[in-house]
Length: 295
Image (tube, rainbow, N blue to C red; front, side, top):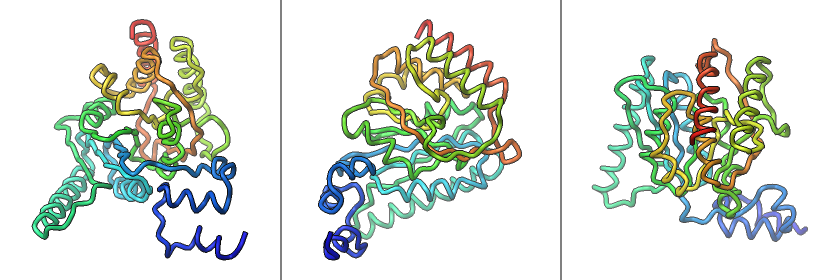
């Protein structure tokens, strides 16, 4: 491999757009097709828009950082934030962001400049606290992208992994992708044994009713083709964390192609703001049986 080939492929001054055809072609010339496949280098068509749905409740300490991390991911996307009536100042931060976004668009229109079609914010406010499931449903209704992805606002999940999660859908292999914390080849913070056991138990029970072989039904990272959201979105009913087994059962019963991809996980403690509790586990059991048997 010559120095000129390395420079063309990796010199940032060439400003290749990550996951563009030109970017991929340069990497393939240097590394070869097999290495590109193994390293996860592929092409995301420029017309593909990803909607990142972020349910938010009392995340004042992390909300700006998660938005920054999502914006840094080099894919074309919109960011849909749904505030579930936060009480800790998160709502004020989001209202300020909404005002700044509106002012930017108005100024761009006044100057005759094109408005960027990526990283645009859509912010929706619930007037009362309804739960994560309700916020996810609101986000799905507001999302306009070709692919829809759920992102928590608490920094437990790393947006840098979007390209890996998107790949099976972009390449036409999957309709739905689950990001699994338990497949084993990505780092994760070691925390609560009983939470781990509860997650494995709920996933196993869900698999019994759906005939899937998932390793992490309760994961936040679920990614969908637009058509999947159009079908199952209006059917979703759960208001809190029961949304996870409900979504799983509905995509399974509909016969969609489901993939799992390993992801990293930096879990929070309850002192750091973790919200899920034992009552949510009991409700998840009910949802697994309810939607597993009756759809």
